[in-house]
Amino acid sequence: MIIDVNAYLGQWAFRRLRFNTAEGILKLMDRAGIDSAAVSSISAVTYRNVQAGNEELHEMLEASRDRLISLAVINPNYAGWEDDLELCIDEWDMRGVKMHPNYHDYKLTGGNAAALLKIAAKRNLPIFIAVRVEDERQHHWLMKVPGVPMIEIAEVIRAFPNVNFILNYIHFSEATYLMNMLPKNENFYIDVTAHYMMGSFSQGVAKTVKRIGAKRVLFGSGMPLRYPEVALNKINTTELNEEERKLILHMNAAKLLRISI
Amino acid sequence: MIIDWHAHLPSPNQQDSFLKWAAKLGIDKLCMSNLASSRPCSIEDFIKCNNEMAEFFKKHQDQVLAYCYVNPSYEEKALEEFEMCIKEYDFVGLKLYYDCHCLDPRVEPLIEKSIELGVPILWHAAQIQRRYMPPPITTSNAAEIAELSQRFPDAMLILGHIGGGGDWEWGIKAVKNAENLFVDTSGSGTELGMIEMAVKELGADRLLFGTDNQLDVGISKIYAADISEEEKKMILKKNGEKILKRRRV
Image 1 (cartoon, chains in turn yellow, brown):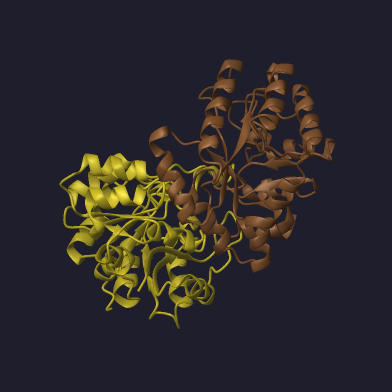
Image 2 (spheres, helix red, strand yellow; image 1 turned 60 degrees about the vertical axis):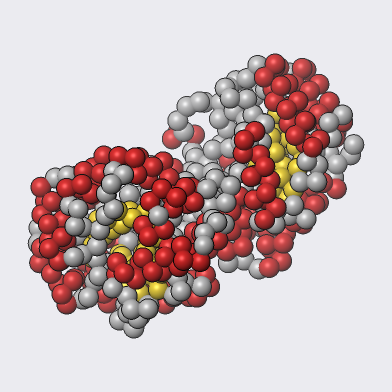
C-alpha cells in the first residue's frame, strides 16, 4: 500500500497543471500505484482568503473521500481562521493542517501561529509545513518566495513537543540541519518530495533513514506539480528492509492521518 | 542502448557507487565530462580535467563515453585539445560550460570543427530570460544557444538540462524553431508536464536522455511521462544512437 503525504488539488497561479482535479489525481495515482493521498488546496496558497480554497477542495472531494484525505490550509494571520479551522476539522473531516508561512507572510514563531499550534496540540492535529511548493528556480519573476527558514521550524518543533510536524518538500541539507539541531526531538517527519532529496547514488533518503529511522520518513511526491513516480523511485532505489519500506510508504502516514489499513 | 547524454565524473570516492547505480537503473552508457572547479578555467586546468577523464574512460569503456572540456577563450589551443581528445582519446564530443558565452566569436572554430568531426557539443544552459539572469554573464541561455544553432545548421548542438532549474516552459519555447538543436532532459527538476511539453513543442526526435548525475530522478521522469512508448525509446535510445552514427572519425 502507498500513501502520499504531499499532494495538491486546485489551480496553481503560475502554470497550468494536469491531474489537478479529484478525478485527475486519482488517474495519476492509479498510474503510479498510489492508493491514498493527503491533499490540500493549491489555490489556497495564493488566495487571500484561504478558506475559499478549502471550500473548493471539500466540494471537489465529494465522491473521493475514501482515497483522498483532505488537509485544511490555515493562515493564522487572517481574520476568522479559528472558525475556519473548526469547520474544516469538525464538519469536513479534514485530518490535519497545512501551513504555508512563506506564501502567507507570517512567521511560524509569531503569536498567531503559536495560537494555531496550541490548538493543534490540544486536538492532536498533525501540522504539515510546506517548506516550499515549487523549486525556487521556477518561481515567477514577480513572486520569489524563499523556503521556510529551518531556524523557525526548529523553534516550533521544540516549543510544541506534542505536535507532530510533517515537513513537506524539505531538502536533504535542510533536513540535516534539523536532525543536527534537534537530535532528541522526535516530533518531526521528513518527506521525500524535494528535488535535492534523492535515492540511488546520492543516498539522501538512505542517510535520513539512518539518522532518524524509517518511522519518521514519509512518502510524499508533490503531485500533480511533480511526477509521483520520481518520488517513488527514490524509495525503490534506497536500500531498505521490508519493514522500513512499509513504514515509509504507508504505515507512518496511516498513523498520523488516522487512516485504517 | 540507453545513453545518458549529460553526466559528470564524480569524485573518486563516489565513482564505484555511481557506476553501480547507473547499471542498476539500466543506463548503458554515461557521457561524462570532468569540469574545472573555477571559471573561466586555465588551459592547464582543462587539460588536466581531460586527462583525468581519459584515464577513467579507459578503465570503464563498457559504461562510459567522455566529453572533452575546454575554455574557448584559448582559441587555437582549445581547438587542438578538442581535436586531440576526439581523435586520440576517442571522446564522444565536446562539453562547453560558462567559461565563455556561446555567441562569443571564439566559439565558432570549435563549432566548425565539431561539424568536420561529426560530434556533438553539449552546452551548459540556463533556462531563464536574459534580463532575470544572475551573474556570471558568460552563462548562455536557451534563446542564445538556439541562435547559435541556427547560425550552424549542420552542427549537433545539445541544450543542456532543460530540467536544470529555471523556467523550462520558456526554455522549450525559446528553442522550438531551432530545429537542429537537441535538448537534454537532465536536471533535478521533475515538474510534471516538462517532458510532455518538450515532446509536444519540439518533437521526441530532438530530445536526449540525460541525468546530470541525478540518476534515479533523471530516468524516472522519462518513464513517468505521458508520452508513447516509441517516444520514450527515441529519447532514451534511438536519438542518441543516431548521433553516434554521424561521427566521421
